[in-house]
Image (cartoon, protein in one colour):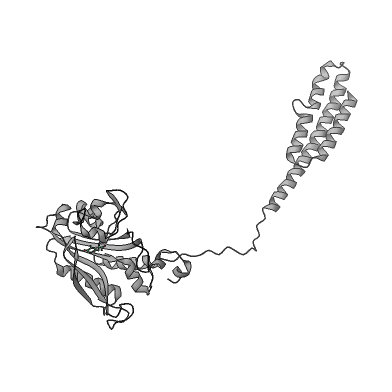
Length: 339
Ligand code: DAH
């Protein structure tokens, strides 16, 4: 028995000394000191010893266990220490390493222009309304006095989702939505994206921006329309800018017009930007057609109003001297960083 114990001690110490990792050393602990371990089974077998032998062997066995335990504890703590140091080594942060450059975003020229336009209208007491880009054919056309088969539909090459749903070709449907749910007085603008299946070139993009405007109240006249839009042009491009209204046709306004402003590059002399005319076309506008008011639940005998629609991209291009609309949608940092 004594020899057996001595052998167990010798083997255990040897094996512990060889261990390099904590899982390994734990296995050795279980092998010798665990419930089914070698030393444990010896202690269990002590019942078979004589009365005299029992305390002697018991004492030796306890010493062996203590010895192994002590050696184990020391080894475990030195292995843990070593492992911790290795881990810290691997996690070292090199504080001298140069940082990664963060690119700071800039506002897009469309947003810059839209913000300027919005602020001018907000100053004049307009609210901002939004409408869906995926729109019912009804709001995009029918409510605006453009029935099926109307020739005006072919001017706006439409992306159809199905027979009743389109990608809106204009921001004008927001007019109809607002008139349906709000009682006059109404004084709103609605900027947003619109879609047309045009072939892409320097002046056409399948996605572009418009800004709609609508004013409805008792006694609104074409003079209110002119006054509002002239003031807008001066605030947008400067006090020297003049405006003129040319008769035009839109199905949802009567009478309809287009507004031109004196070219802010050549101030009316004629240049490349205004193609020599001295004037730049800014928007479509008109007095809201009585039929449109009626369809949207507003009595045209009681109320009248005007509406207008800007092509925002055009304003951006004119504002910054950009000659290709595609630049606005390509997200090229070399271009965008200039603003
Ligand atoms: N929706 C028209 C277009 O896309 C622009 C427009 C013209 C809007 C006259 C209006 C308006 O509100 O009164 O061509």
